[in-house]
Image (cartoon, rainbow, N blue to C red):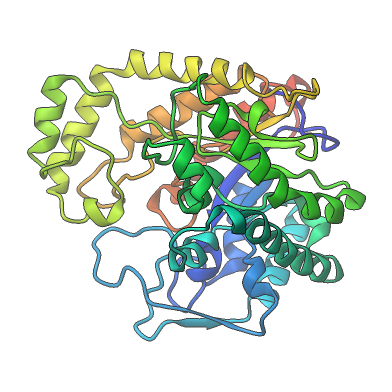
Length: 407
């Protein structure tokens, strides 16, 4: 591990995504925000990665529609109020920043707002791409000016223009669709060296997305972050306005033929990439047993995959100018979809997440998360010792002088 910029420690990151706000309704997992932030500090986190909803920050209130009411499995952003949930976004972001200030926690400012906004867009044509990206950035800049006045930027550890640009925005850009025919998904683990045309497209797009934001936050000393899909040639896709790369490593469990057969007994397609809506229909007892057996059987290969991916990251983080970008991990360690349900154990999932984090801490990352599920929305959050001890390991990987202090 290396220290994060001028903070003198690596970041220990909990991804609170957009759920911290959408699930803050009465009865929601973030309803008591003060308690959640205090618990984050107890678990050893010094950073929360959150959606600050720049497009909604400019409004007085925003209404979130119901989501997940009929599912057995909780998922990110669930709004468990039948009539939906209306909230003053600006006031809630200010409240979060103030609570984090009290507990010495920083905020990585991101947005998944693209999930809703981009869902209403078909294709952004070639002659519209630059204007669209710069308008997206302009909205951010307006929100950032307000956040500076509101004291939010005082807690900001980075600003990222858009979550997982290749997935959420790339799928809407005509230039990307022309340059790349492969269907992408979250947490890709295979680096590809033969996509120069696609790399050039994303370099252009990322510059349009980031230029105005960089100009706005540079005077505050806040880094501009790139939120990746996973394994990308980051150095070829970014320009010098970027200061940081946020990688997402979320591999599915490695399966033998025997494992695939066992997984398919849970439901057709269960051996392939699944998200919560699909998992909700599975025989979860069979799924959990097959997943644990596959993890146990193929664990050595999974650990080797973590090493190979970490090595690949640092072979792809130098810009054409020679500038080398620091790296944090905020979504990990796989898979993206896992059922939080009493019939499925967290045991082997915790083993894999913690061991992968320990492997990554042996490389020059500037910050790590423990798991996609280490947030108050999921039951894994209640395992305080597991989070605290792994976070201590991450901190001590770079700062052994912490040993002996009162933790």
